[in-house]
Image (cartoon, rainbow, N blue to C red):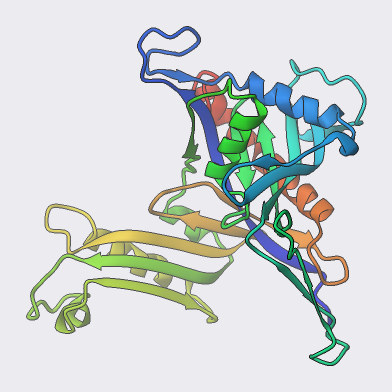
Amino acid sequence: MVQNKVSKKYDFFNIYRHTKRKGVEGFDEDGNSYDLSLIDEALLNRFNKIPSSLTLTKLGDSVYVGITNISCYYLDNNSANVISQGSDVDLTQEHLWVFNIEKVNTNDEAVVVEVTQQVDKGRTEYGSEQTQGAAKDTVVCFNPQNGVVILPPRSGVGISRLLKFFYHISEGQLRGLYDSIIIDDTNLNNILHMSTITDLNIRVTNLVDDSNYKGSMSTFNSIKNKKMAMRLYGGNFVIAETVRWIRNIINLGSGENKKLNVDKIVINGLHNGEMQTIDLVTNRMVANDDVKLVNGKIIISEMMESVKRVYMANKTKLDISHKLKGGQGV
């Protein structure tokens, strides 16, 4: 049976401007500015352009990026109303930009294989010219009012490269762009409400150097190991026991006599039938969404719909955080 959906994960970032110069107009006492109108206007300019007038932006010796698809939505409570391309966009109304950004690396060739043909006949290579290269797509959701950016992890255009692109499309006016992860108030109590845990990822660093130590880290010490990464999956996790076990690890990593550094604890599971990701170390906001496959493949339009759904599913939480911070980020 062909799978018709696949789960995709998304990371949340907050972007802002920062300067170390004292007393700069438009920046607060910490040297921060949350005015991202230059990016907003640049994206509006791209929204109104016809495709034949577009060119790629060079970000490195062999890396070029450009927006291939872009949509804009007015936000009204819990709904996102699409704005037709070519119509006037009121930038004073809260809105979302959802777009696909294409990264091209001229050092890479693309290979396509037709699996119904023989091995020596089904392979075709593209991008052998100096000005050609393999492309990788990344969907982005951006709210210029609160500075929220959502994009998939380990994507072709990560947050650093995206900020560099924003600098370029603002024609160099937007200096000092920074990002921070958005924090979610998650804790062990959230795990207790999960109906299912699908996998658990842990990474710790041993601080104890005593082979006679008989606690939970005794094997860790006996082989003189310092770091351990572990992924548990594929079983029927007992929720309460899993929480108790995780709490023991957290306790070993806290207090004056802590036995280890807890570098990572990430739990994936289901709550009310929806996939949830809880990060107990960085507490970063992470979301999952099921993306519809077309002919068994992930297509750009479905990914753009997906990243918009993820924003709307977390809109209330983001709005509250934005309000609590006095309209200065999330």
